[in-house]
Length: 251
Ligand SMILES: [Zn+2]
Image: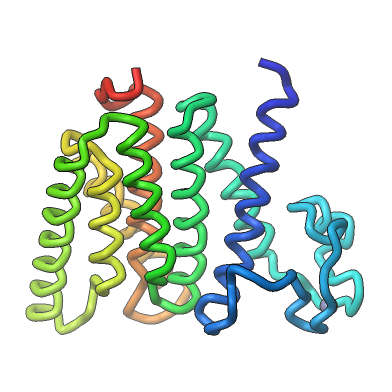
């Protein structure tokens, strides 16, 4: 393996992260997110190729728009770095395989979901659909277990609805939104049944840690659960690829 390959994979992931940041900005504002050139949200100038190199452009311009000087949120760079790292990790465990492309699509959808849920407390349907489509393609190139995937999706959605009902009835709070229910179903599409318990534990721990941080930051009693589900799903997928959890489908 040369040094160049991982760097290129990371940069490709960072480009997906750059797109995810754009979508995360436009989707909740009902702006068109699949077309239209990138513009500076402050001054509206169309950004050129050299303004759009992930991470590098931000560092070169010291975190500011090159035209109007407005600060570019650190969040935009964080999404690029994290998505780049997520895609690099997928490539390291799944290798040069069609599965890696599917996982990169998932990483992009989850990056948007995490960013939007943290800011708006919603899980955008468009990204749930993208993550689900990626999951169906992934089952096609891995174990082909479409029936298992469908049953797991229905089972996890039912579990999430039951938890939602319990929380609403006894605590009087909406602890799991309908977006979270759909995201649970997506996890069922992606994960083999043997890994679902690991997913629930990982997502629960990630969700609770985020909730504690959310309260410590004084952001209110209701916190988003989408990021916990996203981290749990992605972590268990990587564990499957790395052979930490038994799953012969990609052997
Ligand atoms: Zn500007």
